[in-house]
Image (cartoon, rainbow, N blue to C red; front, side):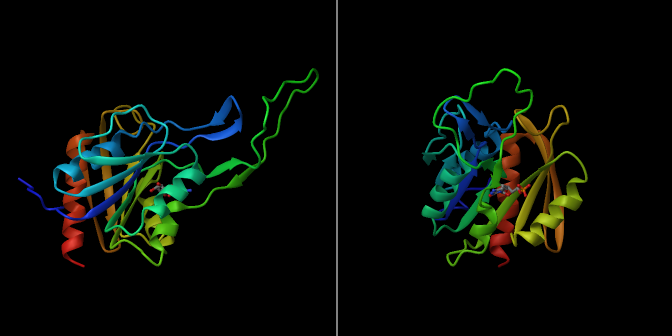
Length: 221
Ligand code: C5P
């Protein structure tokens, strides 16, 4: 029994994909379902936290006792997350686009006879996780996710250092039964001087296990 070990803690969570508009009918998205972030929001609320969930475009119901802000693009997610600081814990579980079209077209792009290729110019989006970790109102614990297809632990450890976060939860995507769209997942959780493996398990169970790790880190700071 975990009881209400997150009572009175303000937990800010981002979840889901972002959609970056190309024109009024097309966008660049990704395969994040939002299930992991929503499961963490649900578990944190059950453990007594005051949970704010910033959700990209997903069709998932809001867990009980969770407040929710819906956004579409990386720019909107950035504004919503920073607008919700201060918080005690930030968990960046969203799959934020790294690049977005420089200027979405106001009207639908048409294919032209003889035009066999089309080049879209993309610009970098703000790194929400790194900004939260460097913010004047930095939450006591900042937790990032890393979805990798290969060299999972190596890339995740690099992210931990580069983004100056306290914990990185890394999952392997592109493997059947894990990661995006799946109900199950397995996480390698890393911190500067250690790490642990969680799962494979249903995302609900994994959410509680990740919160256990967060609670231990909270206590030791
Ligand atoms: O570098 P990478 O995108 O793989 O890092 C993943 C982590 O960074 C996730 O926690 C994700 O939510 C966060 N992120 C972000 N803003 C971005 C890109 C990634 O917050 N623009």
